[in-house]
Length: 102
Image: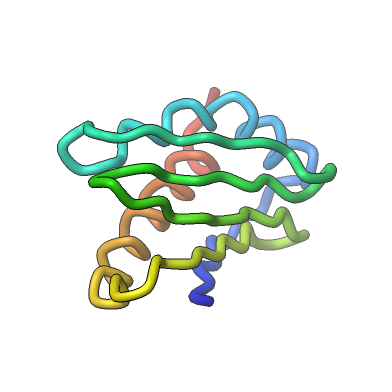
């Protein structure tokens, strides 16, 4: 399962606050705008989310760590070739969640 790590210098509480405030915006990162994102907190430092697009579902989790947000994802069988694109989208989403004020 690939893992994308996004470094930060925020408190865990601030990372959680930003994730909660911006999680609904993740759908905007799906190419073509055709999709949806479901998310839920599994515990204080771990959010599970599923990206639905093009008839597929990508399961993922984001774990808040002291110095990084670790995001892992599992692609459906036969979709490994899109891993670099998915990693880029996840990195972009993580940067938006963490680096902007708000």
